[in-house]
Image 1 (cartoon, helix red, strand yellow):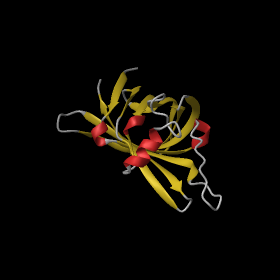
Image 2 (cartoon, rainbow, N blue to C red):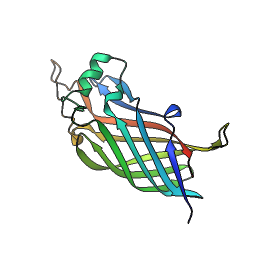
Image 3 (cartoon, helix red, strand yellow):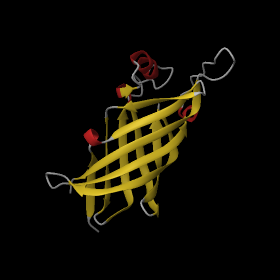
Image 4 (cartoon, rainbow, N blue to C red):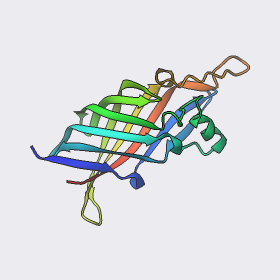
Length: 177
């Protein structure tokens, strides 16, 4: 079986998260620095090995004061835990262009299994003749399961931020071999 290696093209990819604020609106943020890749069978992406790493210090919510707070020990503790990593253990076609991606997410020193939905966007050769493929990946995690326990309450007793975090990644991979 021939093996194909792929790397993430960070210029044509993005990683975002969404979380409720005051339970009335959604805050969107992103991680601007990340890297990753995959190893697959030459003819198929079924059961591919996928790995990913996010630089916590690159968090960006368009508000520097909030970003600094998110980097602090109240949230991600970027000084002690500078990366969020993912290592797949299962990538399987469900139907058509839809896949299930499961693996281990490590965030703030805590490793837990997660399952994500991935939609294959297609493949195309770029101007240099390199083959590229695209996926949109989505899922949800509970922030408290990963040690993000910041629990400030409003005057009325509600949470300032929600429990569930929605993850969205649009990933373009470039074939290496």
